[in-house]
Image (cartoon, rainbow, N blue to C red; front, top):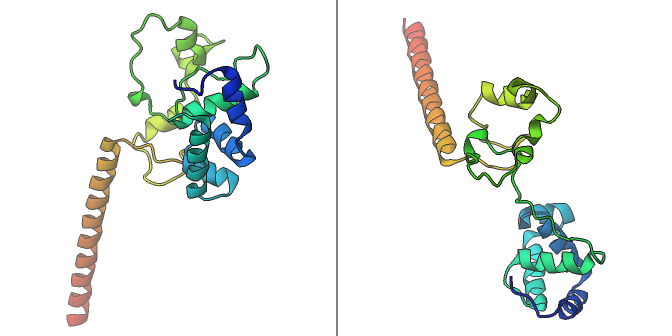
Length: 187
C-alpha cells in the first residue's frame, strides 16, 4: 500500500480533507460503491467520485480503499486496530457460488460459525435456506431481500430463455384467440 510517508505526514494530509471527503471515505471503508454512497448521502454519484478523486490527490494514494484506510488509521484511538481485516462478502451470495474450503488454515470455528449451539446439520438450516431451495433462480428485478443485481451469467441466460418461451407461448395464445374469434364472427 502506498502512503504519504510517516504516520504524522499521513495524519496531516488527512486533516486537509473536507468533512464531505471524510464522510465519503468512511462509506468507502464500509465497502459501499459510488451509487450506494450517493444514495446514502443524498448527493450525485458524480459528486461522490469527485470527492474520492480529490481525497486520493490530497492523501497521495492511488486507490480509494487506501485512502479510506488512511482516514481510519488517523481517526482510530491509540492502540486500536482501525481496520477490519475481514473480506467483504455479500449476504446474498448463492451457496453454489461459494468456493469449497480446502485450506486447513481456516479454523473449524470459522467454517461452522453458523451452526454454533446446534446439533446436527439440519439445525443450521434457516427459513431463507428453505425458501431458496424452492426457487433456485433469483428474480431478475430488485426485491427487499436482494436489492442489488448479483445474478451470474447462467441465471441471466436462464431468465432470457424463460422470457422468450413465455413470449412465444403468449403470442401463440393470442393468435389462437384471434383465430377462434374470427371463426365465431365469420360463421
